[in-house]
Structure formats: C-alpha cells, structure tokens
Image 1 (tube, one colour):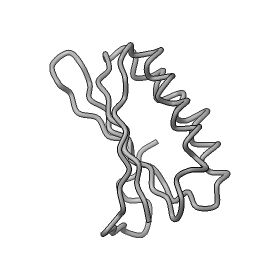
Image 2 (cartoon, one colour):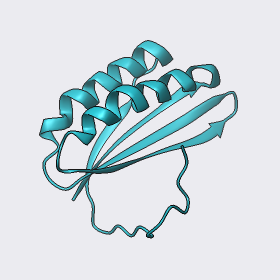
Image 3 (cartoon, one colour):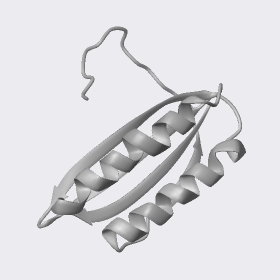
Image 4 (tube, helix red, strand yellow):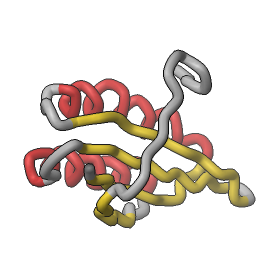
Length: 105
C-alpha cells in the first residue's frame, strides 16, 4: 500500500473553495481507480492561517493518479497563492476501525 501526502498553508477564507475542489473534482476521479483506498484531510490552525494535510491511500501504483494530484496542486496554487508540498510513502502500518465512528462530511 502507498500513501501520497500534500501539505500547504491557506487563509481561512480560501479553505471552502479548496474543499469544494477536493469533494467535487478530485475524489470522484480518484474513486474511478480500482486501487484507490481512501483519503484523509486534516487541518491545524496556525495563527491566521490553516495548515492542511491531505493523505490519499492506494493499494497499488500511484502513477495513474498523478495527473489528478498535479491538477489539485495547481488549483491550490490558484486559490491559496501557495504551493503544496508532495511526498509519496510506503504504508507500513494502517489500522482502521469498522463502522461510521469518526467520519465527517
């Protein structure tokens, strides 16, 4: 299993637009790939800005989804005026609980 992270800082007022792009454009396209496992998007308030960290999980190669990830980085640059750092990882341990606990819309 592999993971791709994308981290960036954003002004509070730009966050809804970035989340809209993730929800309406990125996730539907990721779901078309059979090896897409899921995604986690985290935020941490840092003064007047928000740090956003996105983690997508894949059961296989990341190459097929790279163009979508590049488009998301371009959209973050457009909306937030900042670049997003990107890193790929091998997942060495993952545990998820069954059920709907902890999920957010």
